[in-house]
Image 1: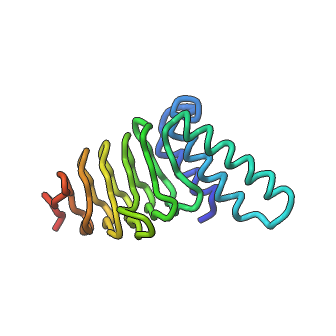
Image 2 (image 1 turned 45 degrees about the vertical axis):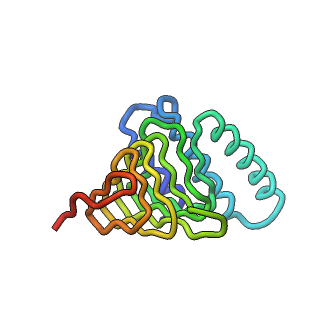
Length: 171
């Protein structure tokens, strides 16, 4: 799937007319997709100029929205961010397709030089949830608000608490 197709799938998750003007979280997603498009260009002056433009836009949008989606993270199409602000995705994190993030979500490592989470498809992550370390969150999971996930979450499960525990799993 191309980056532009991923952007189109992102837009489909925002049903409002002219969502780019109404949903500040889309600014961060657009800058992320732009950065990935720049990285796909052949080396040269245009790529260098666009890389500089990406970093300027990244810092401006990161400051305005408090959303950090570095272009090196792997984020699938159809990302939806509700109630933007305080969202941090580690530069090496993997987030699947059609995932939903709410304010205050952190997906990152637990220390220097440690591995980061892999998030499956269709995962719904509640407000202020922290997903940390070398773990895997399966497809179709729900992570409760303010949960601290430090271990794997099986496909279709719901995890809540600090530290998070599995409270429900689809059969």
